[in-house]
Image (cartoon, rainbow, N blue to C red; front, side, top):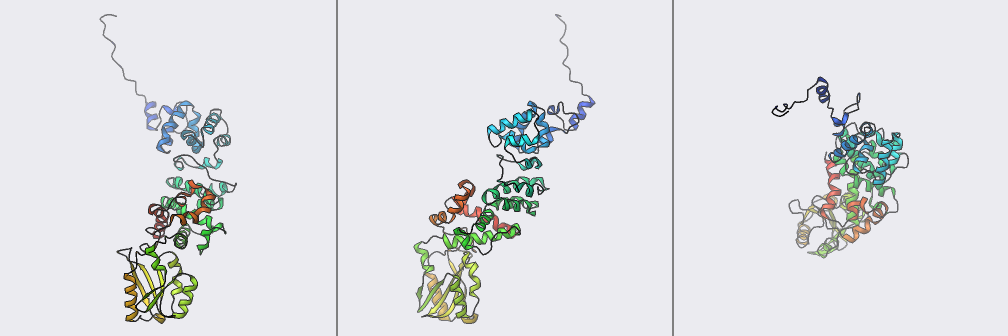
Length: 409
């Protein structure tokens, strides 16, 4: 009525029931979910980029709230788009129709064992491993107790199933390394899977440089160490750049009346070890991994000393004399020492990385491509990653860095 003051605004009455609901973490998403756990805490277990869409799905149909708990992987696939928009649409329909979880999984193209995975296992686009039927059995009971490692664990299984096979993926699934070093293990998966693939393909070129093949009885650290040794050897043997300034390291040269002869094969080292009564043959692996260069110092055809060259610790582009010894590990003569020093001073850049290894070594792009062509053709360019790309220091570091780090733990 005219002249009567407007009624004062009133605040909603706070009831004990409302307060209890908020205290239990309940929100408007929990309407109609009496007796069921609150939705929001479960949503916050998923990757951040999926949460808004998950809330929207729950608002649209209460059955999605149950799906968050009964099949987190299916809920995530619907939120991020699933393996494809068609699959997502079919998955949404299956959920709204109240279909069994098996049918929801089939609609989304997900393996049914994914329903056992926690929300933390999913990030980025949802993907699935190659599976011959045995992988599910090997993986389902090996889900990490540490849910923070679940995403690394699942990605590693997917990658190894595609790069190697289900047997390697099953081996990855059961390893204890996911308990404490999941991120580092995930970073090392690509070179370890490549090592396993080459171990299982007898006719491929890269396998020829292997001393030990992958087996399911290896620990992850052992496989990582073997993968690093193999990569260093195979790249040294097949991929190093043969620049003019480096060829002098690999050809016989004269210095003050002595011949300095490169030793490049196992047979060379065995024969030299017999001539000089020393253990030079035991340096084969380190030489092939790029850790050193080995030479015989001869007067005419007579060996008078054995020489080991390594990269200088302070200036890796320079070579240094690591060992120079006469027969039976006796001291080399002063004349031999002076001749070797004179030869070393006129050499070009040292073709070794600091302390051995891959990074910092001159790799020929054409040879690199030829070496990995069988692997790249088998697994695909995208899956092969740095193996399918021109060699760069960053790419080599991506492959070698995690392997070295695992050895140092």
